[in-house]
Every structure is written in structure tokens, then in C-alpha cells.
Image 1 (cartoon, helix red, strand yellow):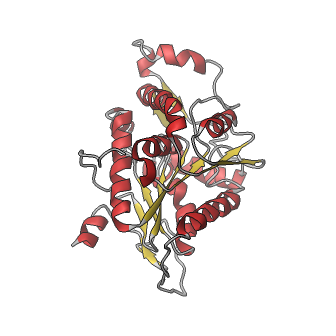
Image 2 (image 1 turned 180 degrees about the vertical axis):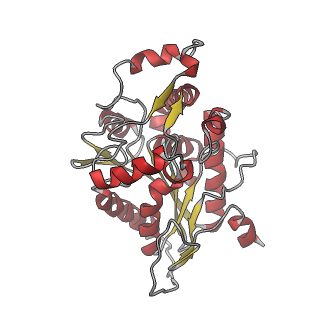
Length: 314
């Protein structure tokens, strides 16, 4: 196992932390995305008595320029720093991620070995080969090294990774409205795509080294990354892999129609990981539930700004 990261990547104001029991779930969003993509999973995991932490990747929840200023090594370093923060609070840590977040979770598991107790991989993306991807996508890997290609940006379009029309309308409105902290960037610059291809190539070689038990959830009709991504990963992991194929979702499975299936599979994994040595969990009760997007205090936990871990350590 590698040593903890030496590079300081402090928690972000956009991070979401639910304090609970000694088994924790670190959740990592996708490329150009935000922790909000995973808040439903975090809330359900916390309601079951666990700790959940949605971290923010370096360069995200800001502008395209912020994203271009980072490389995949920065994204990974911010993941490793978040993992170390959560590990300091929890006895066992499961790592989950959506799309690029799942790829980074696999890289973390390969590097940190038995420190990672389980993996929850939601629509992992090694290749952008879904049915809604442009026909010229194969040419981009060469084009991004040319002056014209470096100026390319992939603009999000229908169906925005969401099959449910009502949810899609809300996500699209926030994204196209420029609220990158809530719904992510509307366009992904070529530089970021190149960095995703680089980390994906590395992770493909590392798959046999990943021994942690893993669940994978992927839509059969994923518009961004085809089911081939998950079948490739499941067939090459070095540990137990459980693949669930969803039949009524697109790419963002954590928000789409079958999000409850995603939650159920995640809770089952958390339960299995947390059985050994688990301690009783006492949660504060509240009779007034509040929407996560606006709250600070939540039933049984807190959503905290970037200084949360520093305050708790005092």
C-alpha cells in the first residue's frame, strides 16, 4: 500500500459530509460534475447508520478554466486526500464513484490495497462509447494534440445522461444556467478529455491488482459510456465483482429512474462491509426533514463547509 498523499488538497466548500457510524462511504463525482450527483446515495447511506462523504475533485465546481488548470494527477490527489480524511474518522471505508469518479476509485483501490474495504462503481467510464456520443469521438484522441483540437470542447446535449424527462429538465436548466456547483459544467474542454483518457489507460492495466469486493451498476442503454465499460472491468478485477444491469436509466444512474436500485445495492454492500466489528450507531432524530441542497443541519448529521474536518480535529 502506498503512503498517504503528501500534497495538501483541503476539503472544499462544496463537499457534503454526513456523520454517522464507523463504516464510511467516500463518493466521487464525474468529470465536470459535482458532489450533488451523489447526494441521494449519501443521504440513504447515512440514514442506514453509516458515515457518507461526497468529495469535490480538484478543479471542479468552478469554471472551465479551473478544470483546464488541473491534470488527472490533481484529481486523484484530491481523492486520496479525501480518503485520508474519512479514514481518520472511520474504521472501514468503501469508495464509490460515478463515471470518472468510479475510475478514480479503482485507481485508489489499486494503490491503497486493503485500506479500501469495498467499491461501488456507478457507470464507470473507460471509454466514451455510448449511443449519444458524436461519431467523430475516435478522432478526438489524435485531434486534441493539434492547435484546433486543443480548442475543442464537448458540449452537453440531450438527453444529458438522464432518461427521466422531469429530472432531465431540472438538470439541464441548472447546467445551461451556468450553476456549475449544482449541475456541473455545460462543456468539457479537450484538455480534460485527454486527462480522462490517460487515467483510464492506467486503470485498465491496474484492474487485476484491485482485490476489494466491488459492485457495478450500469445502464444497458447508457448514452455516454456503453455497458462494455462495466463488463470489461468486472471481468478483469482481482476480487469479487457483482454487476447489476439497469434497464430504465441512462448514464447518471445515481439520479435517474432506477436510483433506488443503486441505493439498495450500495446499502447491501455497506452492510456486508460493516458487519465485522460494527458498533451501535446512535443518530439524532428530527421531525422536520429539509432539502439537502439548502440545509446545513440535517437529521442525524451535518453538511459542512471546507473547514469541517479541521474543526472536528480540534
